[in-house]
Figure 1: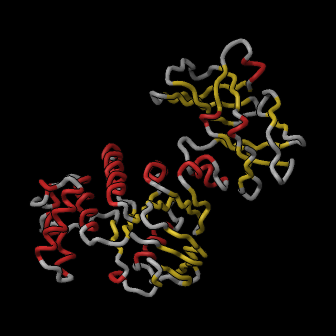
Figure 2: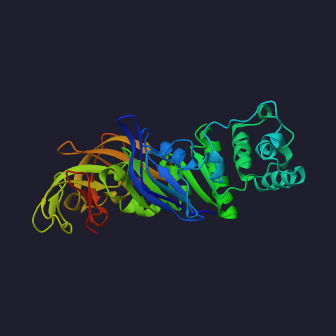
Figure 3: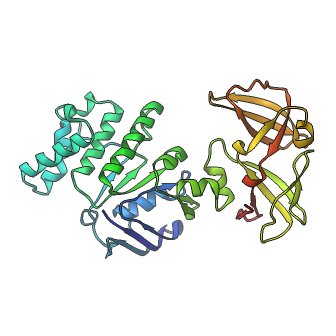
Length: 358
């Protein structure tokens, strides 16, 4: 296991900055996920840790050893790429053993390591096959096995599931989580898929525009986003955003509904963007619905089995997604009354910074 520390790390290609002054510590034994959209710098950051990209400025330490000038092979890290990069003419066993033979490891030790990795990944019966005889998920397991046999201090995984179909991606994601629990190794995992990040990570580093937006556990990032970007990027469907004028005393009104009261943020009354997740916008029923909720016309109804998403328009044209039960009978074109859970409201200022009011 390894602790990996980055201090004020930056990366530039000519005059173009792709990573800007990033500092973070990867705790020994944790699975840390770099999450962000394309172009946010997550793969570049991973490649700098691996030694595949030069660090323009700043310091990298692996287990307390300054490492930014070390060659990739001297860092004791193993990388799993999006492309499996298996040798097609070699068997699975030969693919996994290739790197160890290159460094002159005795054959007996190589056999032991390959057998142990194959047992761990439940692919003993695949060892004599060639890559063309394997499914995408099996090839990915071989790529992970090739990393495991190196017995690295940390694993670096760059979007390893992106080439798999949806069902196989879910299954392989579970296998990766189980593998990390068994090995308790330090892992850094890059993805743009927030579901992968939420289900795999001990902590998530959300990257945007070459900077860190937030670091936290999956539920910290989900429940207390540090910025509007994080709030909109994490969660499916995305958080609702509504422009509001917050009055003295914390009063606001959404559509033509009743006045709501929330705690005033430290910055006081003013113009904000209100954020609320669909599961905190509920459909009211019964006689008191019109007095307690805001009227909204339903456009699209998305039935997902366990829940139903209603894409609604308030009287002023503001679009809101509400969530109802899977047995909901509401149809497109219906008018409903929706209520907002004030304990789940987020406020964002004009700079996109979050102001938590609960």
